[in-house]
Length: 165
Image (cartoon, rainbow, N blue to C red; front, side, top):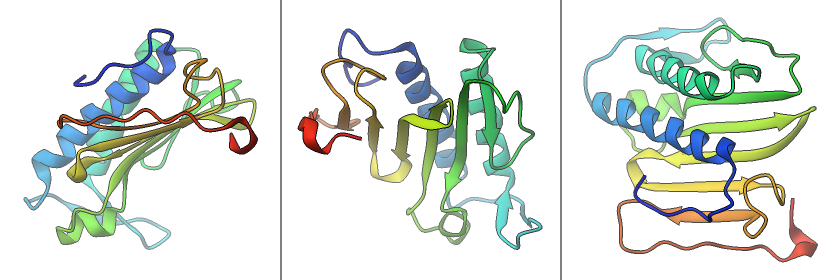
């Protein structure tokens, strides 16, 4: 990682960020390149890149949290009735990705008993990651965090209690 997280950051946060970065590296490799596109039953596109990214995310998340469930947009679900459930869209904005527009991202969320407690959005081509979570889900001090990667600026944002998730 090219940034420093609070010392009390949860393992879930760290692993979700690592998974989002791994997927971003894959999608950048294929961006504006050649890849297969097919149409799903719901008439939306899916690429071989979506599937490759989701497989990598799934491997990273479940190797660290084997008892957690996994619900991805492109691959088979695992243990979706678990108390902790990862929700993944490997390339949110597949239509943009297919057309060569940089407006896509990797989305990873973690639910606990049906409530989203953590979310990581990696804006691949814009070199930023946004993290949002309930207090204490990622760090006692930082319930909402915004950070830039690969630049000299990085901002941590702590949201006032009255507007927290």
